[in-house]
Length: 516
Image 1 (tube, helix red, strand yellow):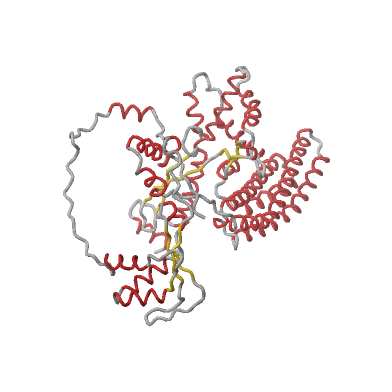
Image 2 (cartoon, helix red, strand yellow):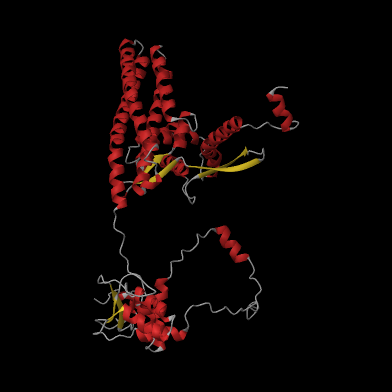
């Protein structure tokens, strides 16, 4: 029994025998059909337009729009929306020359807006197709893609750029390797020119130019991602290999395209037929455009390494934004407690109106609005649903120190501001009162080595406990380390009042000054 017969028997009678290669090929063809679906949908939906638009071939206009945007794209910018509409008008007018010019412009704008998918949330298209998993089960997958997207440009403008899917629609392939596809297209172009088939050679030259645009678009997206986050791009292996491969590719293309250009010029000069000579001249312009695009791509490739290093330094050593946090106790609660209720509510209402996050309203659609209006209200009791009785369990007191020990330690650390003491003396005095008390005193002293001055000032505390290491070693039977100098400091200023306590408009801001 052969492998094919065995696979057919395992699949069952009449069932498919899905394999990884066959299933991947099927998925590629389904995605290719999905990319062309928006173009076919234009001709299906043109009957919904108010007017007689049946004479227009919308798919042809859409392909022309994709072609114009692709060839108008630059490395940093894209195509201008109004310019694309103006260049589409002659093609639209050629389909219906007796129609008014306003109708031609409306058709051009309608086709371009539908290629951008204006009106959808993400301005993209989605297709559903099925594949087989490892266990042979049928799985439905979503394929999201775009044909023409709007991107921000320098100076705050908005430009149009075609995606890889749109270029694949033009050249009749999907997910094709850029390098191998361009080499094949240029070899085909060279063979066609040498045989004098200039009509087919022009199509091959246009495909090679589309692949050049796609190659530059891959590099542009990589650099744009690097400007946002250098960690999102593998600059250790993937991008250096891409740059090296692209530079070698461009060097080979220069030699190949210059040879092609020589053959085209020879065919143009030796041609007798006027149409043959005109087509050869158009081929010269296309190949020159390919050489120009390769030159610009090479300059961008040479700038990619310095750009990565500059972005790495900028993002690694960028200063974090200094934003003072809001202390709810010191900034809001403490200043409001002595105020009357009628004045406090104005401040709290203004604070929470600005302190909570914004609530963007949902996008209202007619279907949602109708459903909301026609849905009867749910019956509710007057006092609401009955709350379940909670099961309260007393938590055990597992703290090491008692409240009496904490009070004794705080009393021991109530030092005069002009008479600091050594930690060793405090530990010896605490040990005479309670054997466990030195551990709590040592913990409070270590915490005082980094006192929260700003928090204590905002919360209105007049005194602050601090500890300083002057290099003296601690001599104690239970503890080691530095014999800290523990003392008490008086804060220089009184607590700041809440800005705008008398006016609700000032309640959203809070003072951020601290004691010196």
